Length: 288
Picture 1 (cartoon, rainbow, N blue to C red):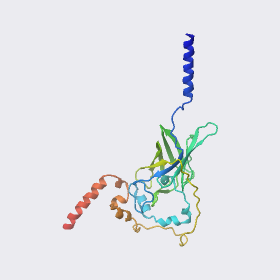
Picture 2 (cartoon, rainbow, N blue to C red):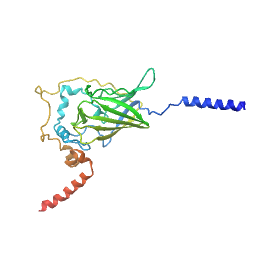
Picture 3 (cartoon, helix red, strand yellow):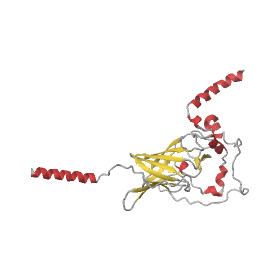
Picture 4 (cartoon, helix red, strand yellow):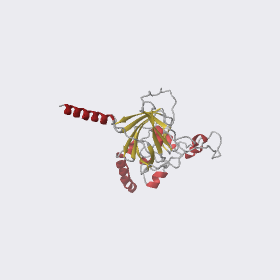
């Protein structure tokens, strides 16, 4: 009996030792340097007027149609970083790392920084969200939490910026919910943007990144230069109905303007039926 008790104690001690060496719950590792996987839904710089897939409100459409690419030559725009609403969809590589409390060894925050962006901390230490009157920034204020092996990020306090780098605007009232999901060396980055001014419904987009162990993202210093000789105070823009480039993308790829122009209706299958019906009706109307 004494030998049996000793054996049970030994087994119990071994089991406890094993349990102490196992984390209480699994947390996915996201640290590393990642390169974007470009595809037909995320091919880099879009055309002017390529608004398909974005549920813009009427106000958003007016802002987008007034956009002029020469805006980026203004000194105040040349070194402006890409904001949170756009950057995860951009063509830049991203570095992700963990900030760990030196005493508790718990994760204080994940950080993400792209080429051509700023450091974006996603706080996991339970800190309170700032007052609504606090300054807004290009990265905003973000808190994060694990939901299973996914990381959920909630971002507020964003400056006015853009959803797509062809003039599609985002407002300073917009909020962003992001999810990181990792499968091996692939990171799926899903964003849900809610904007009461420039979107008529939440916009959901997903991008993918591939882990590149040998990737080293270089520094990206920026120097402002005066590229264009223009009168002081002039801001490049187009008045409503005067942007000559809005139909260029649709004409090149034979996409009807009703779809290329964006908006929630352009994202639903009913639009295709409507376009087909109008196309079939045109020859009949011409014979009359």
